[in-house]
Length: 353
Image (cartoon, rainbow, N blue to C red):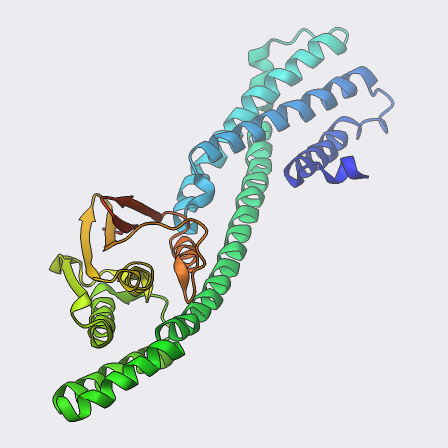
């Protein structure tokens, strides 16, 4: 039972389907008194092996061309001529097989191949087109349905992870330590600098609003993300003061490119928590966004070192990498490197032209 269940579904369908057809073609003749058992046996073996050869060769060719990944409208334009081509191949191979079987198994058969071909090519071609159309359509529709099911599952999973990341991001941004520090800073600013205090309250409320009431869209523009990062950094500078400096370099042509929300902010939060906050003199966070080939390159650099097996809280880099992987089907590249006492977190996101 275990051996049977380990056979791939593709081969189960291949064997059962062509075995049924071959048995029907070869052994419907026993009702005839003149039935030639050897001819039927040879026809059965030939039909079974040759039909599997034709369809399996097509499957390998289709896989090499990634036809299973094409959208349905483009796939239809390809498989229509392919079906007729396979019908022609079926005609040539099966007609040759039928002729050789009759030469071997039928006594007194002396018909030339050209005469035999002329008498049967129409029937064989129609049969081949009919069979190949059934096989090709069944094969591609199965893969298309599986692909749609997987996409639906991945979209559902991505939606859940994005929502969890949004809630975790709120916890990471507004943990009690950060929240009370911000309120204490605002309290002292009320007397010393009321205008700055009002600005701090606006920033804090804006971060709360973005975290709690951000739309359910899975993507946001670079422009909106940079705005969120600026608010976050400005509010954190109330706590770090001169210990925190920042520099953002972004090509204006890239501001409308869509990225998952909190992508840049998560990198900045990580740089603050594991870089600036651990250094007495603080340091500068450099954010660079540029186009590299077909990728959008996002890099956040901060002073510090990479600590192996360090526990990350909040959204965390692992959560971010998972969201990016799901959103872009594994085409995102993420790296964390260290050089000259500076840590660089780099993300390469594919950009559609």
